[in-house]
Length: 318
Ligand code: HEC
Image 1 (cartoon, rainbow, N blue to C red):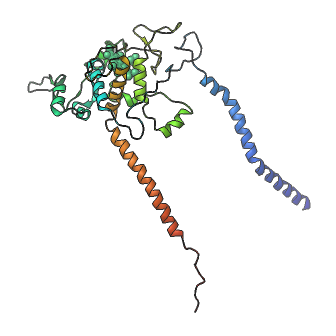
Image 2: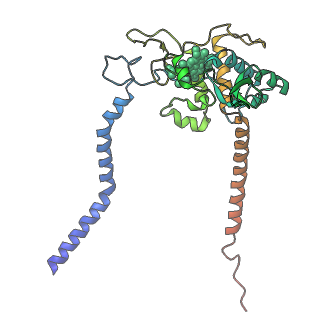
């Protein structure tokens, strides 16, 4: 019986020792795990050879360059669109990009937001032809667009668009500024939470448009491709550099450079993808103000509800 008891106490103290040592053991196991995984992580972080040298065994990572950072009028909690810039961007889109890119979720009538009158929008829409029908004979027909129509595609279908562009169809531009972005990585993405960085799309489009350059030595660009280290999917893309200086005439005196065109059209595409950005930011700010006031009120309520739990004085008897 005594030996049994001794055995039990020994067991119990062993268990206690194990329980005490548990955090230490867990830490050791975690450290061992991390030591095993770190070579993998390091291998992933290694910068890729520029342009994805085919002779190299490692998979190249794209984009080769991270997007440049532009200071936009619409960034930050009080951001707002610069209407002059949006009008210039519309001009660049109309005169250059719309030859290849559709924008079929954006209606002409929404151009009123850019500061145009109803008559101006009507006249602008009439420059485009859209397909309508069928008519009484059952035929489809073309007619000039009206404000309730959407920016049409310059190609009849995606296959025709791809066939005309070296096999890659130009993507629709309605949501492009929201659909593209490049991972910012640690620790940048943590700072982004506080700075409210949401301009990855326009930064990317601007960098792409201004990023065309000669390929570095040893990088083979496929036929019909154009080297651009900012492209997300490869070292080159099927779009030839679309902009050149003095290509679009600005009538507000803004510089007619590739840099300015790229900024303006990127801002315009941001508006196209998120026309209610200003409203969203304004509402967000009001919500934050409300939450701060509400927190104060809740705190005061809590203080008042839990106050005077202890009796102030000895209760009167008798
Ligand atoms: C000659 C036709 C043509 C014109 C003009 C053109 N593009 Fe493109 N664009 C393309 C093609 C083709 C692609 C698809 C490229 C690919 O996937 O390789 C493309 C792709 C893009 C992309 C997407 C890249 C990605 O990440 O997938 C952006 C952004 C873009 N174009 C912006 C513009 C802007 C802005 C303009 C006007 C200044 C413009 N393009 C004018 C043909 C054109």
